[in-house]
Length: 378
Image (cartoon, rainbow, N blue to C red; front, side, top):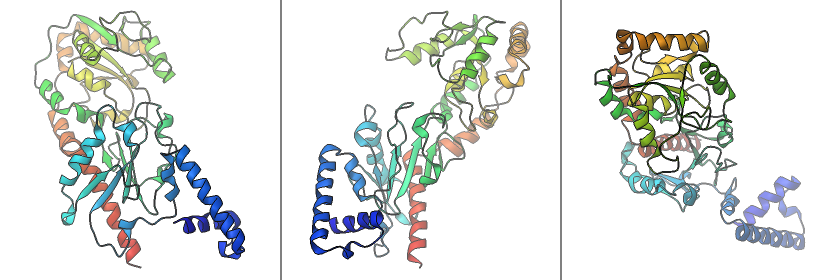
């Protein structure tokens, strides 16, 4: 291994083989490489896994190895696994996924030379977990998971550097739209009659005041023409009964939202396919969403007349006038609660009725078969 590494490094630096050096110089170079490796491993234990990058062949992709199982290395295990033990669940459930040809999917966190490397681009917004996209061995399949929009630096990786995408986009290899986390509850509440106990008009819960200045300008303009109870740090004028730090803060927010006829749902980024949980929380609380975000939203909502799309109005003032009109017309107000459940069922069947883990395994397995066909047919 050391000899191979030294020859590779020397050739890349000097553009000639290591064998051209004298025996004494070659020995000195090998010692230098060994000392550098030891220093790197002791001072950067996590990054020392990169030593294999671009040099060692993935053993399971070898043409002499006819196993059809797929092994997937879970990168940054200790960081990603806390506090929800997500990776533990992945490892436990992956062997039970049904793959073609009776193959097994083995997820692990100790074999960097697995067939595939699964990594989370960021754990929380802007918390970068992987600055590079190394393949720990040649032709390793790279699987990128990310639920954040591309505008954040945690997803700044070149798309050409990974083979399988797992994200919020319906067009990704493994689509994981936010709606899937609420789809069953959305179907349940959609069957209920229009709410009659709401006593307040419009609410806003927004704390990221430095993100997407366009949405801040939109809300600021809208608030000039109609009153909005703003519970977050942005345009704050109404206090929450509890701190955001409490364990069930989201539950408190949902309870408050149930009092309002409308909820403003501004996305942090307007990008193709990016639909966060905001609009789904509004549907769950039976509040009419005032949505500012991607036009792709029409692919997921249960009817185009079940929410207010900000871009359909000539100005925030026109939107404010129409909100007042809805509040004064009971029949119009109730029309927003006529849901097209077929859209929900379609989304559930197409995007939500499968195991996330098994979808990842299937995506990686297809890539492995394609790689072996290309490599071993020549």
